[in-house]
Length: 396
Image 1 (spheres, one colour):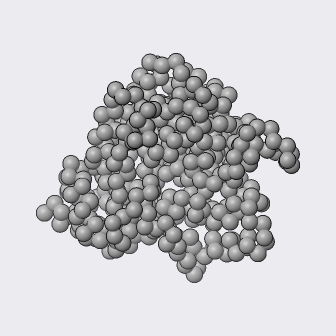
Image 2: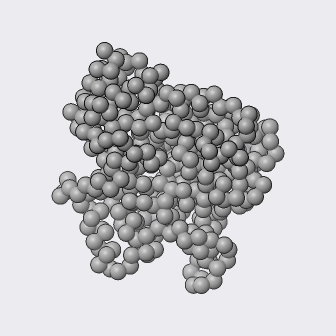
Image 3: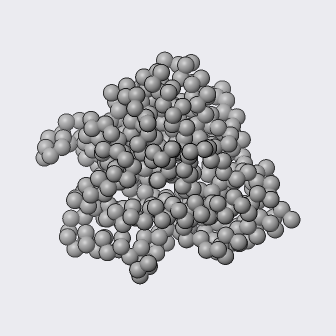
């Protein structure tokens, strides 16, 4: 199943600190910050839903999961949703469902969290890296086309919607159509992002989301696959449930794993999904504030193509003195993060995977220059001013 169709087209507040000080990608800050890089907010409705699940006794893969799968698929505009244990297992399951295996190669960016490429390897295939656009940090279609046309073993594309900005899906879709490739969206950082009104999750053959605590919405841990392809959804659902056939009891049609989502996670997800539009609007408001007030400093603020809706999982600037600026921000009590300082193709785990002569200049430059500052919905006006004042002090 490698081919792809041509269609692309406040109540009592309960706040959790679990994972709040750990930025996406797992980097631990050096100290607690007055303005943290992330601040997960569950809310009272999630607590109430979890309590209901606990009282029901149905804690594992139950009705709450089916409800969340359906609701999230509806939100993305797809026919099917498959809940998983996290974003990485969602990626692996989606690739398996599309028939990826040994001797296959999948094009993906090196400028991403390592899970993007790891999922390809865990599915039995090999990641092949293409460069990113230096302005958006998402896959550069020209680089992708060059890679695809130079090889005969590419079966699919795995673009990453990095920092909350969609990858150029129309251009990538054209490449996929020209070469009979599938497209799996890594949307783990982009819940609610869109291109011309169409939400990510509906722009490829399948898409994968993460619900880690620092993401735009959370289930504590968890993931989701969205797709319009019924056979892909069925295979993915089977794969994450020990290869069982739907409603077949202990009949196992294929090899699989236990990567199911729990009912506890789904209960949180249902409550978080209701709040996701407000969360995203708050992130976009914070980003617009930064856009207006950081322009006087020698930093590059995020670039958003026309028609694209950025949901700012991270607000990422680029500058020549990145490490010095990060130190100044931390000294001022502002949490910040570098996502990602070492491209995947330069990671020790990829010494025997990435070609020794791979040239990804935009990727290497981005890794040396990017820095993310707090943009989460919990920011106050005073918090935003603290961030700006820290930059002003640094550059004065």
